[in-house]
Length: 381
Ligand code: GDD
Ligand code: MN
Image 1 (cartoon, rainbow, N blue to C red):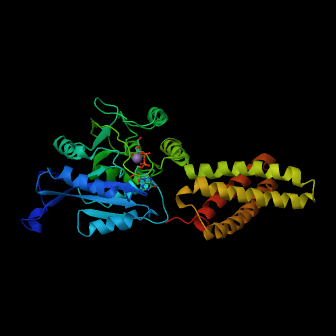
Image 2 (spheres, rainbow, N blue to C red):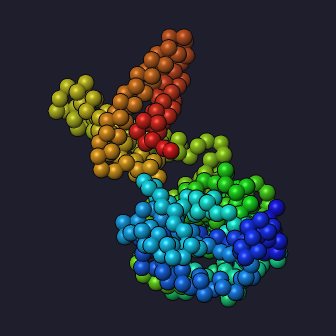
Image 3 (cartoon, protein in one colour):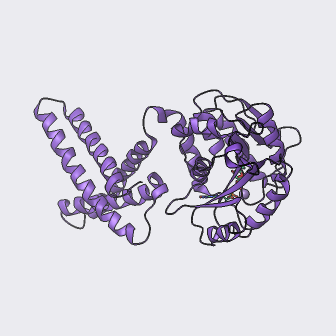
């Protein structure tokens, strides 16, 4: 069990002057180079009143932002050892960045805060006092409790956030007024206990955490006012909304069937429509066999594109790898097609009705295509 602010157990070993790391602040960044110095300086001002024997750090988790955020963080960190940089390559995602940031911390408490100054870092010292005094697992900055608010967030964004909050009731294990908040503090041990069960999809790491925690969490809330972004722009786009749906699915039916597989099959379903829509006109121009082969090529290509955008959005192929990936996908699907036909034939020869033999063949083909393409086409770490 962690000793938090009271019992600096490791201090004796480290020498009398050593300060024990008490709080890690995790700030996910994508193109935030103009904001990070302001955040660091404000954190330094706000966190100086925490008990003097305790130290804190800020960990920026940057997804290799093209604006050089990571390089700038490192530059600043050279003279400020309480600043750390965790740079990720070939991946994007607010939630997964936060998860990795928290996992890289050794402090008993970890706070999560946006790097664009929209959250209220002046509350961190109070949050730390609360979580420690109350022996809580979680303190959430909420825009819905008295004194909190949305600032000048646009009416559309506000309505979207409120609607998403209502949907979150489907997966939450207990009541939080603002599960969409990205501003909170956790006991690291409580977070790590949930870590193996997290979805990691999208933006909503707090909701993911409270939906995944294996044991009930002792939680507190405190109000904060959402501020305007200091510089740059929000990364919220259609993909973020899509990822939110994926998170809700993963936390509901995802217990029974992997959502990625479901999505792969749905894309396959659209492929059938693309195939027929291509075959219909092309069969008038050439022989049926050639038209059928052409339609298969078109539908495999559209499946590849959709899977690359949706199913494997976290390991999306770009540039030259898009071409090699496409050809490996053709190869995988051709083998899947052979497996489909030969398995269906086998069942049919053994007396299965045409429809169940046919459906079993399709299922085998899908499972093969999914498994093999996630190994050969969209290689994941
Ligand atoms: N590493 C990493 N990777 N960081 C990211 C990514 C990503 O793919 N996308 C966004 N971020 C960082 C941003 O740089 C910023 O520091 C923070 O995550 C929040 O991103 P914004 O794009 O500014 O989010 P927002 O203002 O639209 O949404 C905020 O409001 C929500 C509540 O309405 C976020 O704070 C959410 O966490 C919050 O839930
Ligand atoms: Mn923001």
